[in-house]
Image (cartoon, rainbow, N blue to C red; front, top):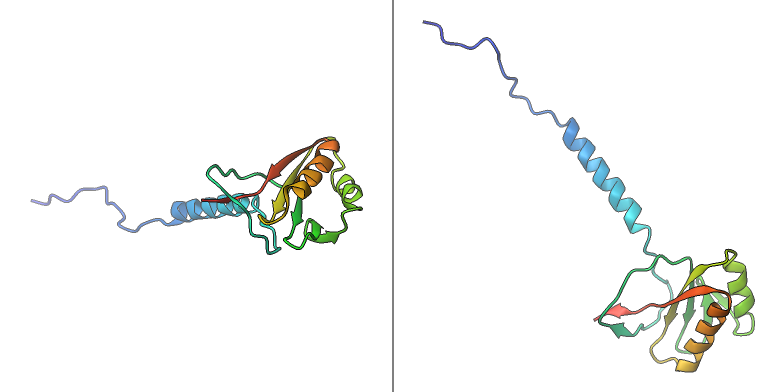
Length: 129
């Protein structure tokens, strides 16, 4: 008696769906990783318990020797406002402050005041504890 079935199952594994899934994951991680752009300047950021990730368009860095940088380009304190005005062409923008922890508070308040006068949202960059 011959008991073989007529429908034969192909034992080969099809990898096309697995490949599609890997490419989708790759695209997802490539897109989400480009939102975080760390500052390339050596700044010792203060630490905080709550740290959020903010998409930054304009970053202002103040180093411990009181040098000012807008998007890693050195500027003087006198030309900081005009440079920020040029970078923030829209009515509302986001300015992320990368300020060394040894910089006096008056410098941070000065930069935040300039950015606020230009109707920009000010965020202070910190490192998580």
